[in-house]
Image 1 (tube, one colour):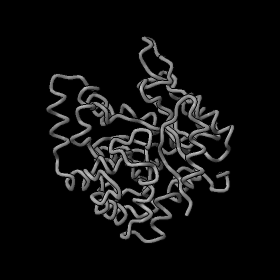
Image 2: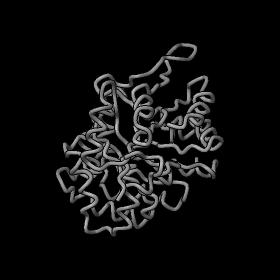
Image 3: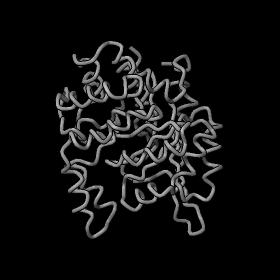
Image 4: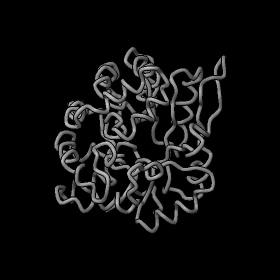
Length: 302
């Protein structure tokens, strides 16, 4: 079974260590969102008339792609307020090491409002034009994707982090980042929504074939900490039944795993899941990512 991890973070000096881990665990390839842990948002340049828009860059993973062809690929974070977002997306599409874009409006109500009112539409328009899928972090607001799919029927969207709102252990971080007087109250109430109710809203997007689901951070999102993350299994079964295994891709996000499982434990929690068929495991652990990200297996040297 080929294993492709559809989200990790990587920073300076971590390439050799990462390759050793991939070899030890039998992971063929990883999709990187370069984000330097401990220095939030870096690396980036500030752009725009007021120099207040972050345009991210990916020097570490670009080097990794050249040094280890096929083992690494990466996404580009696109910002709707970047005055040159057209060029950012075009250059991403021209780079053979880039497989997708990412947008993260789910981190604040202001950005979700902008998203719902079409403020991110330019990015989706460009994604369709240049044939790039878009990872979308919507944090409990998956219903807002219907408008995007209706407007851009050829779009491909991958919902990040199971589409769930931040749970009890994460919502204070969201509230702190948003920084409004009522942030703790708002995000706390969203986090307190019953898991089944929150996930049912995500499952309803399965009716749109343009949408796939990234099965990442499931242990924290479903209060299922500790190998083998038994509490997440019923939700994964629902996702497979709704989306089909060909639209569910596994991600460890091991660089920011709040519940502390090892990389191996996150892998085996899926491949040792008795509720899944062998074919479903093959799709979730690699084939779905290969398909949705247009990433041929033969390109991997792993």
